[in-house]
Image 1 (tube, rainbow, N blue to C red):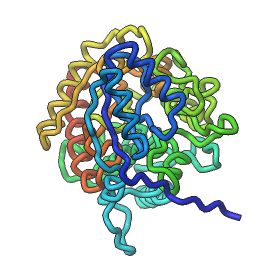
Image 2 (spheres, rainbow, N blue to C red):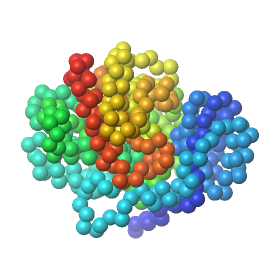
Image 3 (cartoon, helix red, strand yellow):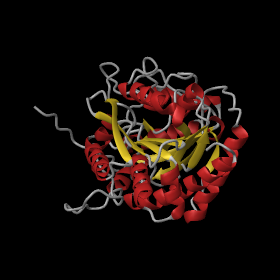
Image 4 (tube, rainbow, N blue to C red):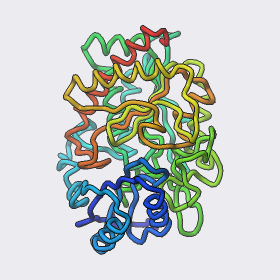
Length: 401
């Protein structure tokens, strides 16, 4: 018998951005995260000098006012009614519509599209099933290669379930590499090998479609009450060295051990088979409009090529802004955003020595958060592609590709 679950609703729930300035504020929010009682944290309170977003249910409005004023905490109302944002995320889809970039799609629909384009382009595209998720879904990668010996670019998306724009942008990007008439894009397609993991966390993505739009983690149970591990805190490089939680119900729970999740272990094993071909690695996330460089863990040194990393980031951010005016902040992930450990980028750069590893945090800056309206998929894709064209050109000047 199938289990039918109702999609969670968030009518009149507010989202507040909160600034953590003092240790007292940090400790209070950490306590609240341990006993959330209806609150949802979009980021974990891991340090002072950080901002995070908290979803506040209607029955907690008065309580939230009380605690934030008692702690003299700076807050900003980010979203007035979270359900309205969810309702406005997707257009009414025509039942005859084929796969495209004016709506968001399920794991099955994304995989079907990947299989279809691979079948249509057998000389340049090849698909790999590199493992199985906890719930038994295929973990799929797709490679675009016009000729042997090209430098490699690896992109992984949707490791965080609720960040739908990440996989939508990755699929859009591959489609452009296959169909664009722009010479700069054709150059990227023909002279670089592209490896894509469109949906790194298919169980989580499926759950955001059927049950809870806010879900972030995997779906492997940890104990009787808590499900899921943050896969981007689960990689075995300085695992649990800051910015990750040991509390199983937390959204940034790092797992009982590194690589406790089949999805992260499989991705690491797959990357090991291609790492020697990879010159550039991108991790696609949302939201905030950031371009982040390694390392993220507590007290981490900067990579020896940090000056180059920042120079390339500056050029990329400026090409993104030149497209539609979207402003990206760039810099080291720990200092620009907050401390994190066990991430894909730290692992690929730290373990495999990949020279250029970056995290993109896509649109927006909080008006809709990770529930970005589908009519922004194409513009987000266009500015990202322009950023990547500039990125690769600068990487070439500096001798990386």
